[in-house]
Image (cartoon, rainbow, N blue to C red; front, side):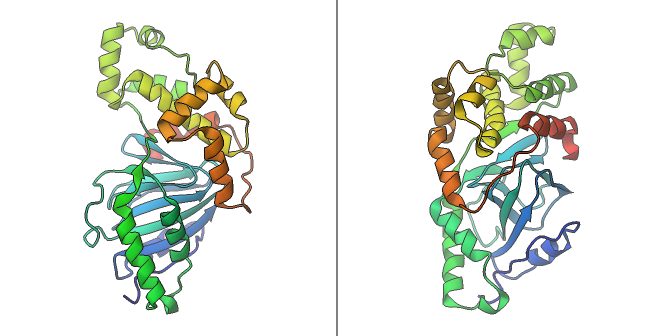
Amino acid sequence: MAGEFETRYFRPGTLDEVVRIEATPGPVATWASDYPAAYAIPPHCHSRSQLLYSLTGVAIAHTHGRHWLVPADHALWIPARTEHSVTMLEKTSARSLYVDTASVPDLPAECRIFHVSDLMRSLIVEAVKVRRNDTGTNRTRLILALIVEELPRLAEAPLALPLPADPRLAARCRQFLAAPSAHDSIDEWAGDMAMSRSSFTRAFRRETGLSFSAWRQQACLFAALPRLSRGEGITAVALDLGYESAAAFTTMFRRVMGEPPARYLRAQKHTDPAYAPQPDATIADDIATLTSHGSTH
C-alpha cells in the first residue's frame, strides 16, 4: 500500500502539484489547502474524482450551470473530468480526497453535496497528515481502508442551486440572489417575466428541475449559511431574508439541514476552536458577483 497517500499544502497560482498528486498510485490521494476570503480557483478538471471538504469556512463551486454551497463539515463530490471552479466566500480550510473510482465502486456519477460524518472528518484530517515515509504503516492502511468504506455511506445534503439557461429567467434569478427574500411569490415573478402563472411555473421547473418555492428556499439557505457562520444572529438573518420570525426560519432550516441553526452553529465551532472567520463582503455581494459571470466561475 506504499504511496497511496500524499499531501501537499497549497501554493498560490498553480494546479501543477495537484496533477502530480493525482498520479500517486492507489485509490486515494490527499491535498490540504488554506485559502483567504474571496480566493478564486479558475475552471479546471481532474483525472480522478474529488471529494472537496470544507473543514472550516464556506466555499461555492460552479459546475455546468449549477452552484454548490460547501459550508463547514460538508463536502462536494466532483466526478472525474467534470469542469468546475471554486470561490471562497470567507477564509476557508479545505481538504480534498482524489479518488480512483475504478477502485471504489458505488460512487455517484454526478456532483453531490454530502454531510461529512464525525468519523469521516477524523479520517480526512488524519489522512492529510500522512507523509511519504509513513505510507506503508499499518495505521495508514487502516485509514485508507476506512475512507474507502465510508465514502459510499455519506449522507447527501440538498445544497445545490441550479440556474436557468434561459437568459431572461437567469437574469431574474441573479437579481433575486442579490437580495433574497422568502416573500417573493410566483405571481410577482410571472408578472416580471410577462408570463401567466402556469406558464412560468412550467418554465421554471423545466429550466431548474425545482419548483419555484423549493428554489427560493435553497437560495435563502445559500444566503443564510455564510452569514450564520460569520457570527450573525439567527433572528437578524431570518428577518433580513423575509421570514416572519426566527421560529419560521428555524423550521425551514431544520427541514433542509436536519437540525436547527443553533445546533448546526455549535457543531461548526467545535470543528476547529482556533478558527475564527473574518467578516468580509456580504453574501449577497459574493453570490451576485459569482453568478453574474455565468459559467466562467
